[in-house]
Length: 499
Figure 1 (tube, one colour):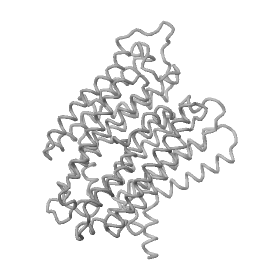
Figure 2 (cartoon, helix red, strand yellow):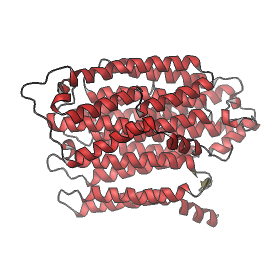
Figure 3 (tube, helix red, strand yellow):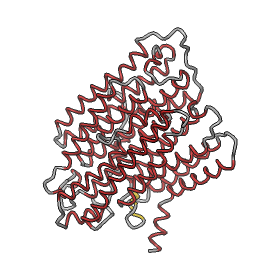
């Protein structure tokens, strides 16, 4: 037992580094009473150290630590890199955010909460025990609640935080009921034990369905899937732009990682010969993937249709984020390695194009004080770099070639076609066309409308241009040279020890 604990602790170095960084930042905030960026730079240093340990994890093979509580494998490492990249960029965004840096507000606790949120998401990517899944979601959620309402002087910020708490509490309660029912049915709380019980035992199908639907409520809340999405628009609009961007990418990535591991391990029948194609045989007659397909269709359709009516860009991008969750759910519906690899590819390209769009919104909001589409009138002429960058990010979010977003949707649709989900491909393509409409509204304001006479060109700092290019170049490059990303995503699915 002691040997197992020592081995587990060695493989938990990235999470340990994040926990130490969190504690150091808390102490620093108590000691350094003046306003300073020292906490931000220490947080960035902590993320760099964490990245070093994650690289070591990548070469450690497939491991299950702390008695099947956490998995350390190539799959979790892939998502940890996505989360780390998001956290690093968000801290850089925060250093330039007028919304956060105005007044005398000290931001030590803000950066410590971002590190705590990152730690929770790291645990979510590897959670292979139902209790660890719940605890990691709670760690992530509590940090998110505080960060969503961090600019507490703004009325919509406090409202966003309160709504987030209420919806989070309801979904957590539903998930706990699902966990208790699964434990009662299978006698196990780790997903490997659940899989064995489903394969060997005679489980009541109706009770299993109810328990699994309650589990999906917990996952759906984290990924903003319909009908668990109600918190998303208000929270995204009321939270600081930096936190909105963070939740739209990193939190969604962690939720998808946990959901895919849960389904792939718990409900895949190991007696089926071709595991790479996926199987739902454990349900014996219930078409579980049809239910996920219905959630996917509702999510992408509602997200795109409601986004058409939005004038606030943060709210518009919130509904766009809901729609993209629907697209990514299509890969989970297939459950083949090809479908899951497509989700991994999509997350990498989504990281650059979505954070790029939010960063552009932040820069414009810093200068104009507005997040409304009307503030973008003539922006393409006043500030060509912003106009061109925003155009590329929005075209990528639509899935127009030769941007990275096209590659992400191409692999998703290819997986669906190979899995003979033709009707889902058609709905996904139609939704992409709908999304083009509300993205073009922004482009029309930037290039086809004249700016107000009082409008002035937006001045950039060197840091603004650097970060914008860091996000813009991969959005273009991954649209034409994506082979290494595809290979890495496919290699990351050598997981769970059941292939």
